[in-house]
Amino acid sequence: MKKALLAATVVASALTASLVVVPAASASGHHNHNHNSRSSIPFTEATVTAGADGSFTLKWNAKGTKRVEIKANGKVVAKGGAQGQAVVTGLPAADRQWFDFDPERGEGLHLADRQVKLEGAVNFRDAGGYRTTTGQWVKMGEVYRSDALNKLTANDLAKLRRLRVKTVFDLRMQDERTKDVDKVPAGATYVVADVFAGSGSFQSLPKTPEEAVKAMIDAEKAMVGGDGGKKAYTQVFEGIRNDDARSVLFHCTAGKDRTGWANAALLTALGVPSETVMADYLASNDYRKAANDQILSHLPAPQAAVYKPMLDVRPEYLNSGYDEVKAKYGSFDRYLRDGLGIDAHELKQLRKDLLVG
Image 1: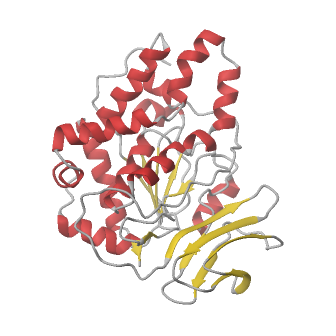
Image 2: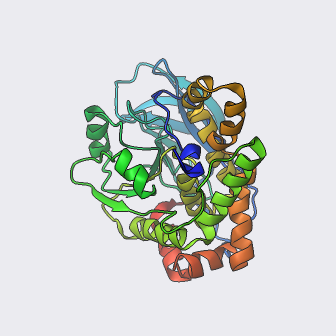
């Protein structure tokens, strides 16, 4: 393994990861979007968290309403006041268990647990289910993010077919794609969107933890500023905008860095608050914990200390991407326009397509 980036995105053989609850967006946040429309969705918080025992924990907060009713498979499974929590058990097995959160006034939400459990990937999850600064919500079941797909089983591929995964964007480098060939569901279009294509960076492994952190920060900046990154993320955004028969999936090796920026950029473009975007990004540490721990446990302590920053996601990594946006483009909207070719009209259409409320 010659390239630091490959070391940073090495795939663990462990196929389990701990479930996490990513906080729903609060009403706060700062984005330079000229949107002041009031959403018809009263929920300021709504989450579904699957338990290892087959239970589902539902949380909600719908300000200004008196009653909330939640259905699964067409049947009421929980109800309560404007704010509440419920644990639901005994539901039949499903690829994803969906819940309809119905307030007594306003528009409801169609939500599932963010993680899609697969036998051959630990960081496969839904990009949606987050609240924007305008009170709209990002639809679930439209866009997915993942780690490598080379270990997917026949059961996994069948599940992805049922989840309507129609387009798969592979963000990895050529040697990664050759070594660990993607398995994609039948009928899906496979697209190479190599974020580091043509890059001369990442030729040597870091020797200290500090060098490892710097390598990760430099990699994040290259994702934003490099020609390969601009082309790859343009492909991803175009694919999301143009694919009416979604779902769309993008992935790299660990599903945390190149994939992390793709999802952070998408959520930011949709108006999701920065603290929510960061929480989604950092969730890879939880989903990948078992896999990462297994890798580190097989390394001598000095080597593990160098590897750990490359297996982690950290706030300074993602923030360096936003810093590069500001340095190169001045604003995120200009990054979308000048870097990824998304003008105001296309951005409006993207929001219309992926937001509810």
